[in-house]
Each structure stands twice: as C-alpha cells, then as structure tokens.
Amino acid sequence: MNSSPKIVTFCCAGSGAYVVDYIKKLDQGQIEVIEVPCAGRIEAYSFLEPLRNGADAVFVVACHEENCEHLWGNVRAKKRIEYLAAKLGMIGVVKERFAFFNVSTNGGVRLLKEMTEKVSKLKQVNL
Amino acid sequence: MIKAEQKPLEEIMKYLEPYKKILLLGCGACVTVCHSGGEKEVLLLAEAIRIARQETNNPIEITEHTPPRQCEPEFAIQVGEFINGAEAILSLSCGVGVQTLSRYFNIPVLPGVNTVFMGETVAHGLWEERCQACGNCILEKTGGICPIARCAKQLLNGPCGGSSRGKCEIKRETDCAWQLIYDRLKALGQLERLKQIIPAKNWGQESRDKGPRKIVREDLQI
Image (cartoon, rainbow over all chains, first blue to last red; front, side):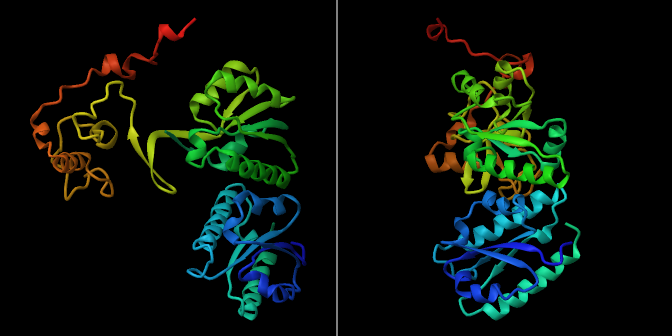
C-alpha cells in the first residue's frame, strides 16, 4: 500500500486532545486530527466518512475505561469501531483500517508507540 | 413493536450489483427503535455501500431519506418525491413497508433488513420476542406472559417435563415461560388460575393457517 497512509484520528477532548503533539509525531503517515467532545459522541457513520473520502484508516483515541467524563463514551466508541470493522469486513475492508486507543492525558509516549505499531500493520496489508 | 436486523452487507451488495442509482429508505417507526433501519442506520449503510462500490470502481449514487413510516399509504406515497430517477429502492423497514412501497412504485423495492419478531426492548441493545400474533390473546389467563411466544413448545398448559431450575430445555439460557407464568401468578395471588385448563387454540380460524389474515372495520371505510 501507500508508504505514507492517510489517517484520520478522532481525539476525545478529555484525553486524546492533550497528546496531539505526540500523535502528529507519527511520521509514517499523514495524520489529520479531529477533536471531538467525547469519543462516544461520534456516530458510527461519521467514522466511515473519512474512508469514503480517501483516508486509508480511521483511528479513535479515547479515555481509559472507567475514566470517561460521560461514563460510557469510550466504551461506546470502542464498540462502534469494532462493529464497523466486522460489518465492513464482509465486503473486504480490512480490519486494520480501524483502530481504537485508550490514553490518559500524560500517556503520549505510549500512545505514539501503539499507533506506530498499528501503522506498521496497516502498511503490511493490501487495502 | 416489530424487531428487525440489518441484512449482512455482503448480501445487500449482491442485490445492488445491477444498479447505479438507488433510494435508500429508512423508517422512523419500529426499525428506528431497534436500531436496524432508522435515520442513523441509513447514513451508516449509505456510507458503507459507497465505500464498497468505490473499492470495486463501480460508484453508486444514493439518495437517503427516512419517512416517519413506510407501512402507511400516506407516508409511502410521499416517498415518490425522493425517487428522482432511482433504479431501485433499498428499504430498511420491516417486510410490511417493503410491500407497501412495492404497491406504489414501479421500480424494484429491495429489503435491507430481516424482520425477525414482535418484541420488547429488554435493555438497550437487547430485544426479546413477546408476541406471535396468534390471533386470540390469552394473556389474561397466564399472568400477562405469553406461552405461545415464549414457550419453545407453545404449551397452553405447561410446564413440560423439560423445565429445569426455571430454564427451558430447548435453550438453556431462555427462561421457562411456564415458570415465569407460575411466579407471576403467585406474586399476584392468582395461582388458582393454573387449575383452569386452557383449551386448544383454533389455529385454523384465528391464525395464519388459512393464509393471510385481514381486519375489516366497515365503520372506518368510506
């Protein structure tokens, strides 16, 4: 695939938005960051719009479980991403094009490492 | 309400293969409540179909619309405004809506969901069957719990010998309907009702055994 995948990353304002600088260090891909009030606020169809518009992958960065300001927003977002990966898997959209990350506001280094691994896997699959 | 599940995307894509322009119709009633065919599901499915067709270099034009209901002529007729050259309608309503639309429009109307049962929202994301439209309700005799819809054997005078610790022998995770009926009648202080034998239902007259049923209210007809 493209050596520099285009990735749209939805970042929760309560966690991901604090580590955007780390996300942008992800030099293996072209990263577009969209800050959202809560990861759970984003409907499943909104995660698909970037793919239709040419993105190679959609990442979601949310708070750790049991640490969501809105109680279950992070869990809902994770389940939506998993649902989409399964649903679109039926028509050949590989699951590597969706990824979900939990992060704390001081967890940028770990997030960058996890994202780098996901991007490496993304680059190995045929989109 | 009627409960439905969206068909696998793979199956829907096969239906849509011959078409370049479709109208994707949700329904604002039952399928919205069970998250299989409401406005959100229309948006999601439309995006998924577009992505699938992009992947195969076979783009498709999709108009999205969700009327309040598809199963009533008043609403079904209004759908005509959105057809605008569409070669087919992909309907996310129950089977009733699909057939109502088929009556009014001369283009194929394809089902996007499987209509599964009439049921209750037990919890968010969990629906269970509660009624089979048998045509002659006996809930007054069974403490408001339906043995036709909820007993695997549809026993009218249960339980059977397979009821164990309140669970059904056919599906171990399912509550035994007759255990539920017993518990409910006990709580209501009406256990003596269990002594009454419920006669066999007149399936041939009341139910579907004689083909599709019809309700006529002459006072409402002009």
